[in-house]
Length: 454
Image (cartoon, rainbow, N blue to C red; front, top):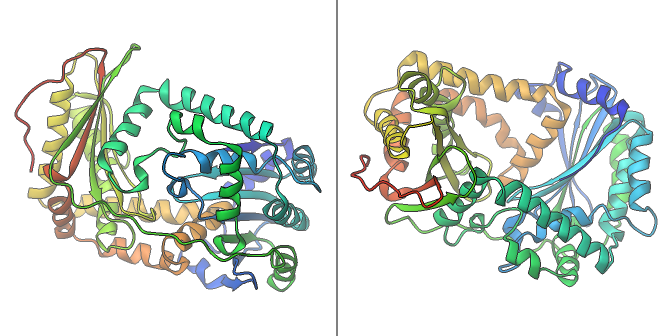
């Protein structure tokens, strides 16, 4: 991720995050318009005149799932290279142009996409449009610049993963749970692959995936559609396209038995437990029930895992669950917990399975179910008060299915029943479908035991 800030942007970002938009909630979709440029690039526009600001976002299906085998981390390295400048605009000038107008810019890479954005006052929207179009077509970076950014990413990996035992464990769990899906390698890449990636690989990645037909522009804020669309078309529509690269959907074969992985830490700290299950994504209706299950287990200090493992049994310092609805390929449902000092990881792991068994065998109460739904609906709705988040939501849905599916979220959550909660728990939270990761002291023996759970 690359980030530049200005003093003025502190004020702008505050407004972006906290101004109450009349278009928040399901109603904002009525104001969306979708267009396709002559070269195949998609454009999604959402006018919102509550405040004189605009978020301009450019997304590409160029995440780590598009890394080539043996060249993992390439997508993330390339995100850094996008800030190296062009013949027309140097990297310093890019930054200066945005900061001079009190704006902010950033970028991020995930498994599924790479995204670049600028948040500016509406009167200055033409500046990011021209800058993004320029670097999409005219990006240039030398071999020395490539090597420098590769070293930066390698150092990021050392600091954020290799020196962070919990992050290293999560990485190992994904690598063990997935066999054929590209989610098995980390976004930042394996160190050996980063050492192997070269300048020519980056050029080829640019030519393969940073094509207009593989891109998506999202603009949300205070603009006039009939004025901004010709500007976007003039800037981006003339960029030549070789056509959208072929993309595949990946799904592992059904898991045939429990998998386990341990990471032995060499630094002081508490152990950690992760239990992950293969689950579907947005393309399967079960995904909404899994969203509700995640809220029941992990939304706030009144959630089950906190109430029972942290406060009640006093086994853990922290405990939670995580599920990603908006992944291109089916992903994982995670349970995680950090034991209190002196508590055994095997005891905590057994407690997680006891909570799962309770979900499977005891109907969730109407009050608990309603609370989880209310929390999800409130989070989904309040998040849309941010212009940036409205743009992010439109893009994420469009890349996975279609932006129109945003309208399905709240009705689908409201329709989840107690029977659905028990059904998906029984269907997916099975011992043969899980991967267990343990963070243990150096040379700490893993407890051999009978493990309870389906």
